[in-house]
Image 1 (tube, rainbow, N blue to C red):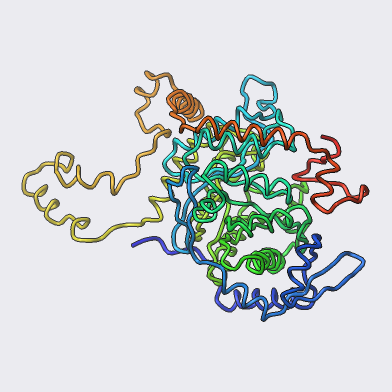
Image 2: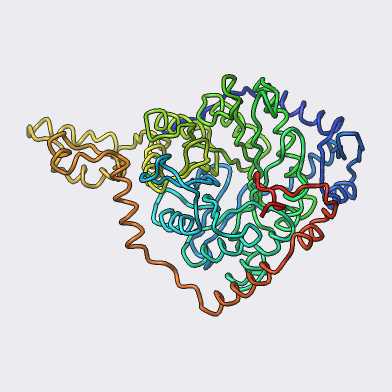
Length: 507
């Protein structure tokens, strides 16, 4: 039988979190920074409470319940050409990458890292597309050699030129999100095709505590109108941006995620969403977020239970580590967090390719994580106990003949069904290992990455489409910061425009 899902909350405890969330949203509300988003809430019966801290939207239980009912329990995303369908629902688990890292592993440098470039993001896409256990990639490596205002144009073009799999990116503003929709429509053959077969996953992160940020809300509205799926994911830290008690964090982030999900359904009922969690704790000794902690694993398990309580596909995170090296800490934290997410039954698991609290990425980690994912998927399958698996006849034959099972047809037929064979881990005897160069796992992974990139066969992007994308990118490059502010409704120069810690005033 398959492994049972991990649980850390009883039914009564889930109800307590739910009831506290409803009370929080109806009595205190959620701070909504975008006027357009506030208007959508208000037109649908929510109340506005203006305070010194900002504009809070109070969501009644009736609005809450009606909106949550409209969330689809399953949906599909596709590669650029409309093939490579990836199905996401509340019962399966698919695995994707995690980012966006600002550094890339570079062993020749003193610090072993350097700032990442577009070339690194392209190689990342190519490696992901070569791995059987990773179904989707995102803007996981930040290309610092590309102007921020044009970043989405360049990365989408490279996705279309290099990927067979779906793609995810933060919906950072109305302007950029409309650009993404327009460019994706050029690639796939029109907006109707994009709506019919979504290719993109928008990433929306509430700001803890209890704030839905202006720019991301503007982008969320665009993506929802065009029916592109969302990963709506809080990233609170217990003890700093959320209560230090994990129960309090769960109430707060449940309110943040569900209020965002409710907004998507008010905009476009049936918009596909993921109930996401990248919530963790603040390490009391350093003040840093602790991605590789057991508490992050516990929060992840609870988030899966809450998502499934509402009938919404869940997104969890794994293969996370705070280590700055490829050491034992890196390994055990990766497996700890990924096993928690996978065994909790998360349906979309972002988990591959990063380290150092996801500030740094390594292509080698992609192929290592691909092996870890394969091993964990094998574990989830559990132990088969049908007549063929019980193998009574084979045991009897071995007893009667004195032979082992190696040459039996039963072994040949079932070996791949029963035994996961990793591609990077070394299981040879020491003598063989020495003879082949005494390579550690990173050296094996580097060899594999080089081979995958060298042999990679890219999809063919129509030259006319690529030309149109380049022309569109030139238009984007001609915009000024004032144009951007005007489009986003942020003309007040005292309001800084920051995305992912990057201040656009300094670009």
